[in-house]
Length: 237
Image (tube, rainbow, N blue to C red; front, top):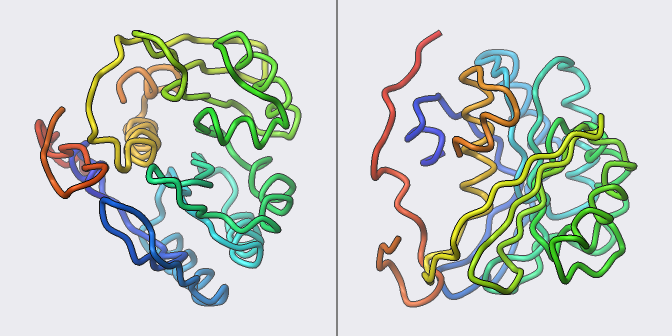
């Protein structure tokens, strides 16, 4: 919500789970009842009518199935899915038996999937050690039905980081940047996917939205990024 607000779009949420966490880790997760999740989604979609939806952490298979079933009632909505499976601090955020439902029901609906290296490895059943390994992983993920996948290379070693966008039509884009030494990595993946969704909502195409999308000392662990360093004015349609 902070990211989307900073980028000038209005964010409305549907809470799928409540976590007990701070910058040092996740201590507990409490899933919201599926019917309440469905009700939240319908309330937002029927009233606010967003043109873009971003999905973050989904913890269990019942919630994933509910999200997929409910969003199918609203065709034409751009869907960005961030397959959050493991937190920055190493805590598991998706139950093991939920992965199959995620791959069969939610992933094929995605206009864009934004996995990091560990998540892409799980989804593709491959080991990713280099940027070239990302290519094979992406082909396997695209075969599951999503329109595009952005594999984030932040976990790879080296003084430069490479993110690679793969489109179902065979197109690719590479986004490269010097490695930034910082411990403020809490929520970076969520921030990126939210930023992409925001720019898509503002009318940019996929490549433009991705391209458009240090050091705040907060907490004792993996600190958050500074979302409001240069906010955009709210865009009213």
